[in-house]
Image 1 (cartoon, rainbow, N blue to C red):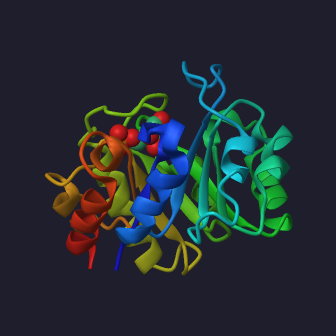
Image 2: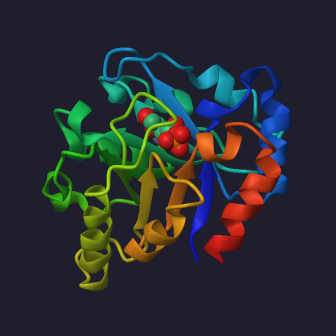
Image 3: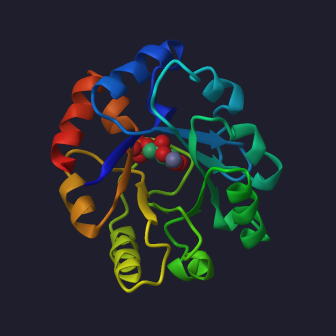
Length: 219
Ligand code: DX5
Ligand code: ZN
């Protein structure tokens, strides 16, 4: 069974508590926290204080996506009892092995994200130790973009690597960007375990109903 991790990038941040309560009621499994620094990606979003304002307000664990340069300097800020994963970009790390171990030593799941054009081999040596590999299906920095179809092949290959015993057997295969209720079937067929969706959940309408619609497709 796959799980839904709505991205609060597309939520109404003036009512964040209500928005997160809605996705929780709708069956979401994680809150996807998109941290952007305006350097690794063009936009600046928010930091740990905004995420920590949700501590105790929701039971949903945090799936933190650091789209920042030098993530090793900031990882500890996002480690809380409610943090499930901290995911860094391979493209932002000179010493990725060291950063992955830094995350694991802090007691949370270690994730690596790969931009669409970045091949799986950039993370291959770490697959046996990773808790999540997040396949970006859009170029990071913005919500509301269209899914880039060739990225689904990376999901398929990663699933095959896991089946061949080349990864942590509990590796979570994540997909992030451009997923909606029209393409979710194809995304699930490719093998995604954790599906990030921002604008398709929070963009207009009722997040609870949108989350319910996704979860119905993911059972
Ligand atoms: C993009 C972020 C994604 C984005 C997903 O850089 O990492 O999580 O918010 O938003 P949608 O689902 O609208 O593409
Ligand atoms: Zn994200």
